[in-house]
Length: 235
Length: 109
Image (tube, rainbow over all chains, first blue to last red; front, top):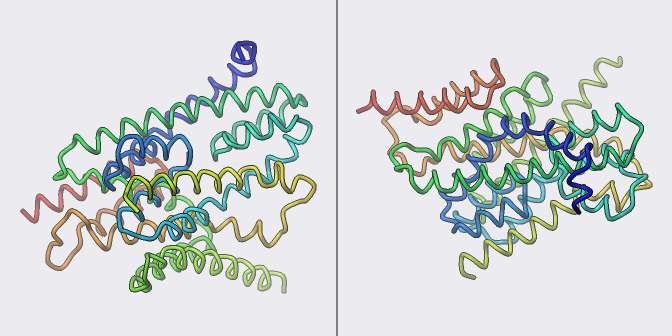
C-alpha cells in the first residue's frame, strides 16, 4: 500500500485533481445540505456520499425518501440518473484493458465526470497503462476524500443555518448551474423542456413516478430531435 | 419500514447499481463497443433527469409561503439560469439565485 501512495504518478494524479475538487466544493456542500433538509441522520448522509458517491443520485434519494416514495421507485429513479456512468465506462474501457481485474474493479468505483476527464488526458499523453492507473487512483482518491469532507460540511451547515435563509434553495440552484450551460444545442434544449414540463404535468402520478417517466420522456425527445435533425441536414 | 432501514436499503442498492454502471464496459462488456443508439440516448440523461429533478423543487416550495402572483423561487431560478448560461460558474449561479430570492422576499416584506 505504502509503495502506491509514495509513487510519483499517484501523487501527480492526486495533486492534479485538486483544482477540480475545489470547483466541485459547492456541489458537495449542497448535496450535504440536501441530505440534512430531507431529514437524514449523519450516518445515513455520510453513507450516501461514501457509497453512492454521485451528487445527483444522493439528492434524488434524499428528496424521494423524504416525500415517502416507495424504496423500489427511489432505487429505479436513481438508477436512471446513473445511466450516464455507462458512457464514461465505455470511454474508459480501452485504457483500462491492459490492467489486472483488481485494478479495473478499484478504478471503476472512483469513476466520476472529473476523474474521467483528467485520466483520459493522462492515458492519451503517455503510453503507460500502469502509470496511468496510479494517476487515476490518485485523482480518484482525492475526489472521493473531498466529496466526504464537503458533504459533511453541507450536512452541518444545513442543520445549523436557520431555515429562514432557505439554504435548501441552493440545491436546485446547483443543478441549474450544471444544466443551463449545456443548453446550447437544440436537442438538449428539447430534452430539458420535455423533462421539465412532463414532471409538472404528470404531478398526479402515484409514488413520485412522474420523475422517472419525465426523465425518460426527456431523453427520448432529445434523441428523436437529434435523429430528425440529422435526417433533415442529410437531405 | 422505518426511515433508517429505508435509507440504508437505498444506499446499498443504488451504490451497487451505480458501481455496476461504472464497471459495465470496463469489465462485463469489455469485448463490446457501445451501441451507437445507446450512446446517443445517454447524451440526454443529465439534462432530462436534472431538469425533471429541479422543477418540482421550484414549483412546490417546501419552506416558503408563496407570494401572491409570483413564486419567488421560480424568478430566482430564472435569474440563476441566465447567470449560469452566460458565466458557467457554479458559485456565481448559486450567489445570484440566493440573492434574488432574499431580495424578492425582502421586497414582499
